[in-house]
Length: 597
Image (cartoon, rainbow, N blue to C red; front, side, top):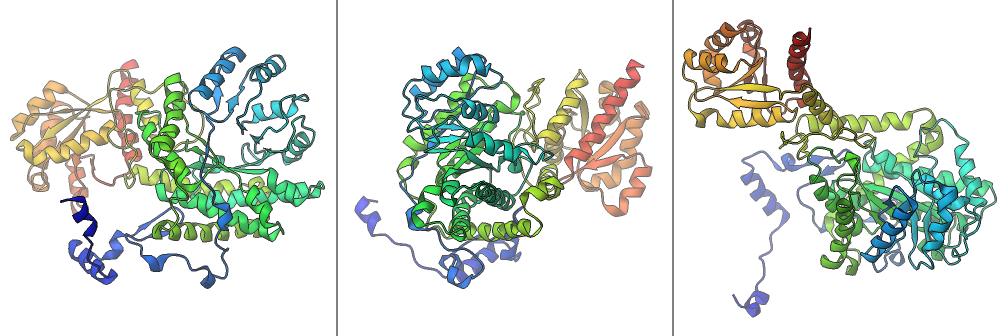
C-alpha cells in the first residue's frame, strides 16, 4: 500500500457496548469484570478507558484543582547518578569521567572518606562547575553544609540535604531540629540550593503503596513547613527550599500517576498556605530513584530491565533529577560497567527515545489522567487521616506508619509466593547455575525470602536433588514435570527426571539407581487414582523414609486416604512457594545433620 493510500484509510467507529459484547464473547461468558484488577492502592483497574473516564473536577468538590499549565514546562531532567569511590583521588577522577560521558549533574557520595582532609581539595579541584549539585546522602550533605568556606558556591544550584524524618528509625525527635540548625548555620550560599528534603524512598523500600508514599510525603512536607515557620522563616522561602524525592516501582502507569498526582496535591497544600502563583511554579522540585525494593541479587542482569522501565516512568511523569541504580548494587559490588549502564539508560531514553523533547507525554491519555486522579484522591484521603491521627511525626513515633506499610508489604510477598505476580529469576525462571554473593546490600526487598531459600540450598554443599517420576508417555506428564522443575529451582533444588515409567518395576529401578530423599510423581489425575498404592509401595520398598509428593492439587475427598497410603503432599499451581520450599529444604538439612552426627 502506498503512503498516500495509507493516509486516506480510517477505522470504523464502534461503541463501548459493542466492544464489551465482543470481549464477553471472547471471554466465553466470564464477563468484563474478570478483566478488572485491584492494586495495592485499592484502585480497581478496568481493561478499557474512554473519554468519559477523564476527571471532571467540577463534579468532585473534595478533590484538588487541575495543575496549573505553568507548572508544565519543557522537559529536561538531570542525570544525578551518585559517584562513590574509596579515595578522594579516585572520586575526583570518577566524577570528572562521569561528567565527560553525559552526566549533567554533580552528584557524589563521600561515604567513609576523611572529610577533614579531602573535602576542600576535592571541591576546589572541580573548579567552576556549571552543573547543578545533587546529594540527598546524609554524610555527604552534612559535610557540605558544615563546610564554612565555599568560594565557588555563589550561584550554585541544586539539592543538598537529607531527610531526618524518614531515613532513620524514629526514636530521636530532636534530630529534625538539629538538621534545621545545620541548614541555618550552613556555609553554603543557599540561594538556589534546596536543603529541606522529603525522602519518601524509605517508605517505598519497606513496601508502601503509591498512595501511602504520597500521603507520607505530603505529611512530611507540612511538618517541615510548620517547623520552619516556627523558626521565623517566610513561607515562600520554606516552599522554595523544599525538595521531594521518590522511589519509582515497577507498575509503569501507577508510578507515572504517582508523580503527576503529587504535583497537583502539593500545589493544593501550598495554595492553602497562601503562596502566590509565581512561587508555586518555582516551588515544586522532584527527584526520583529506581526502586531498591524490587531488585534481586538473583539473576541481577534482569535489574537492568527493571531499572530501565522505572526510569521511563519517572521521565514521563516529569521528575527534575533522576537516579538509576546500578544493576548489581543489590549484590554489594558495584562495578564501573554497571555505573556506565545505569548512566547510559538515561542517555538512551533522552537522546534516542527523544523523551527530552516531549512535553508531558502522559497528558491527555484517558487512562493516565483517570489513574492520576484516582491516586490523588486516595493519597489525599490517607494524608488527611495521618493529619487526623496526629501527624507524621506522631505516627512514626508510635509505629503506626510501619504497621500500615507492613500490611501492604506482606500482601506483595504473598502474591509473589503464590505467583500471582512474577519476579523473573526469583520466583520464576530461576537459574540454578548461579550462586548468591556472600555479602549483599542491606535493606528490605521483595526477593529476600526467596534469596534465603537459595542460601539454605547453597549451604547444603552438594546440590539438593529431587527425583521426578514420570508416569506413562512423556507427552502426558511433561507439562507437570516442567512445572515442578521450575517450582523446585526457585528454592535451589535440582530435578532428575526419570524415563517413562509404566510399571512398578520401572519406578523401583529409577528409585534404586538414584536413592534421593524426595520424589515427585508426575502424571495424569486418573493415573494417581489407579496407581498411587503401587507407586508408594515401590518407592518405600527402597527406603521407607523417602518423602513422596504428587504434581497437581490433591482432591479434598482423597487427601486423607492418600496420606494413609504414604503420600506426603503435592506441588501445584498457586501454592505458596515459600512455605512448601521451606518444608522441602528441611528434608535435605535433616539428612545432612544425621550424616554429620
